[in-house]
Length: 427
Image (tube, rainbow, N blue to C red; front, side, top):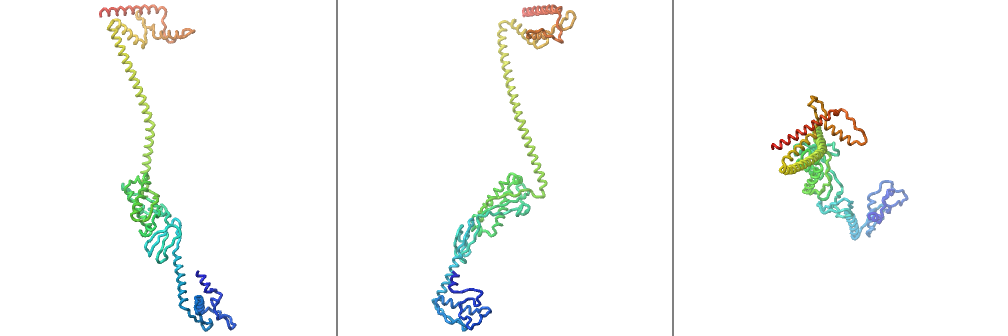
């Protein structure tokens, strides 16, 4: 619009024109070349006023020559000129209130320096300065605050990193806090140094959590829980401060004892690892031995139960047999007693080596190993179609000795029978 206005005025800002415009009537009338010096400021101003007067309908006078031109604009033209200028200024001032907010940003509008409202992404307008102003804040950016170190874990900040545990041990902690802005107005106006405020809140929260925990818990199994507790406690404190911040993550970068006691602590850690290793080995051995011992105990228990059942059954059988013998004994005592004697002697001699010795002739040579003779006879009877097996290392009786043995056996039998008869008669 300003360019079109200048075109209507007819100004040509040409540096090659020594008069800075071609509208002057005081050209080279005497056939002389134009002055090569700088342009006359007063002449330029008079030419400009004349053109404005003609444009606005004024009555211009003067030939524009060396005598100097004069003009007398009327009141209506002056008012129109002022209105046009004011309209242009008002338009430019109003247009300056437009602004664009990108995606993920929020614009905070202030009226005479006081917070008014917030706008979202898009094309927005506010009252131009000095009535209203705006400040654009990136609310989607993930911001990070480092506690205990700066940029690198090795670049420690001891005043922030060293803290005391519940068991009165000093521990060195470096961690990072990530956060976003959830209220741009609170972020801008409720706190002065926002990042330092978040760092102090994080340091306060970690000291409180660590001060209630044991050193081993913080170093090993409790890292994640400590981070979660710090996140929750920081959010509670920031809500009370109305900081407009949402904590997204707390990351433990390094948790270790101080460097002065690191060697001793490593030895203690190694001893603890050895303890756990030996404990695991013992548990593995127990897992191997205990099932075997339980199996052996179960086997012995079953065997003992079987032995118990066998003994009880034998005892009950013996008791039943004794009752039967008692009934028979009550009927015929002598016969029952002789039978019991013979059965007992049969049981005794069946498990012992039996020999017959001829002591009458004064010869102590063994004549009849009866058990071996019986076993040989059983073996011979079991062999079919073959001759009698040769027996080595055994003394077989001669035919001359056999009658003597038979006569002695018969004599002993008669003697025993007569003795039994006498015993029964006495009883």
